[in-house]
Structures are given as C-alpha cells and as structure tokens.
Image (spheres, rainbow, N blue to C red):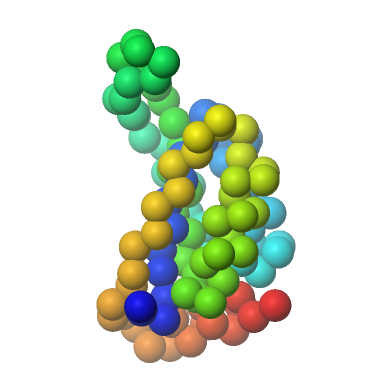
Length: 105
C-alpha cells in the first residue's frame, strides 16, 4: 500500500462539512481537508436523488487511515456515509513529508 492516501466523503451542508473537516485536522487524522460544493445523483431508498452536497478531500498518511475512517463514521450525519480512500502514488516530497508531520498522533 502507498504511504499516503486521499480520502473522500460527502455531506449535506457546508456547516457539517466544516465541522467534519475541523474535527479531522484537530484530531491529526488528516493534514489538509478541502471542501468543495458538488451536485450528486444517486438512488436512496428506491428513489432517484439529485442533491447539493459538499465533498471533503482529506490527505493523510496510510498509517492513520483506519482511525480516520472510524472518526468519520462516528461523526458523520449520514446513515451510510461515502468514505473512499485512494492511494497517493506520487507527489511533492516536501508536501508528503508535511502530511506525515501533521498526522502523527
């Protein structure tokens, strides 16, 4: 597995996205969280949905992934939150070193 990952989740309001983002960085589970407004189409409980959401893009070390996933599940407002981790296979070494520094417990 890669040493670093980007984790994506979504939420239903800018305020809840900001609260999740702040909680992640304060707990040192992610070095940086970007919040982006998006529009999501999906089926939930048998009906097609078309909703405004806010996507959180979280950069973290692979060593903190399990704790980050648990934190998101415990603090998320959705019944089944999207939590997807993608390996970071390259990038600016100085930035990735900073990610490591920021996510040490």
